[in-house]
Image (cartoon, rainbow, N blue to C red; front, side, top):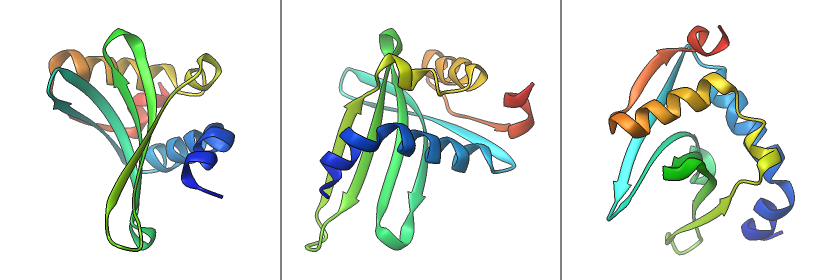
Length: 119
């Protein structure tokens, strides 16, 4: 199965796996990044042994997307971006959404104890 197909057919499972990974650590890091006029906050996970990165990004106007980056056999980096559907957005814990919005507004990443998101 190609990664594009995997994201289209199993995006909910990928989002859940990402959130479990992010929220299972002692601290949660919400990052900020930008390119040209686009800005986003994000949480991510790396699968180092497979050279993959999965992130959940929040852009302006409450637009979320699932970002999947990987290296092919020729060591070229590819990125696949898929906007989240409304039902996929509901999977994201409300406190995490609020922190991601704050990071986007402040244009600065933050590191929080995971307990903060469960209150």
